[in-house]
Length: 191
Image 1 (cartoon, rainbow, N blue to C red):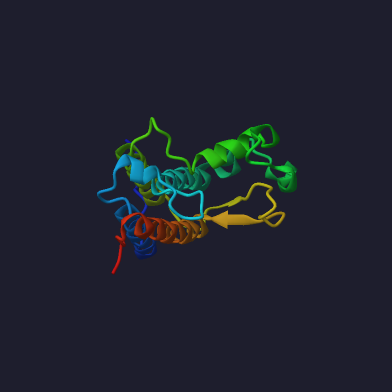
Image 2 (image 1 turned 60 degrees about the vertical axis):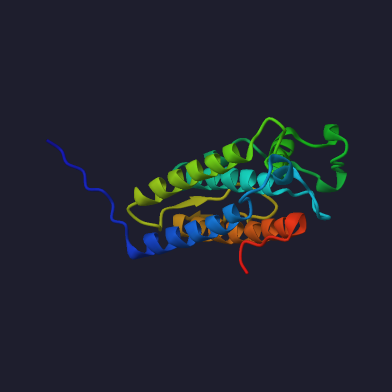
């Protein structure tokens, strides 16, 4: 009989996951008691809406959790180095590569999507991330980053780096959502 030892939940894993969970909660709080229309609304100069932000962060977290286990395969076939951003006209989708349109769609909460569904999907992404991290022997596992204008050639990212990135991205988007929520009805996630 073969027994396998479950990797330890080190204090570093626990701390990073707790910090990420805290940032997720700030983001989710911005959606509390919103109607579907409010969750889709874009009341600021930005094209962002609260439901779309939550949808995007869930998708990003899913991708980064897969990156921890699968490396660059998690990002699919997108070739960001081939995109001429100066020639893109978002009003004319024919100028936008399909994978860029897919990325842009992450920020849109469509009429057939509900806030409850978007929040549920985010909770599922959180559970998957936590399971991936719990299953790691070490946060030092590292993969090459895919070629992209924002990645240095040959750059890598460890599982630890991914968690720190997710904490930062989630906090940034929670701030965006907080401003949108305050514009909608004066509510804030804090204060």
